[in-house]
Amino acid sequence: MTTFRLLWETHKWLGIVLGTVLLTSAVTGGFLLVKKKFHWIQPIAQHGTEGPVERLAPLQDVYRAVFALGLPQFRSEDDIDRIDFRPGKRKNLEVQVDAIS
Image (tube, rainbow, N blue to C red; front, side, top):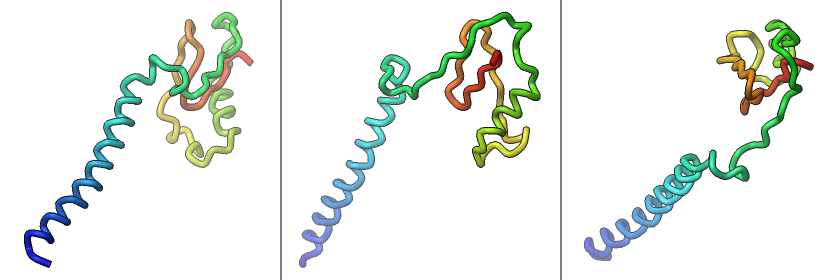
């Protein structure tokens, strides 16, 4: 096989492999950009019980509810990055805990 032919074949196969990787990255990146506009891309969101702020569960009960799920990534309070409090919109996409019930 001549040097030119070897370089040609190498260039062709590297182009096919790298092109596939770049195309996959572009398509999945596009989905990430528009995921808020299409509900079929988003995971199913749970809606909590409505009620006044006075009925919210104490923070230690929220921690207990997260740990009761038995997920290996949640073993201590240090494993929880944040707990969102959204009185007008009670939903979270990571771990959902209904603060009322």
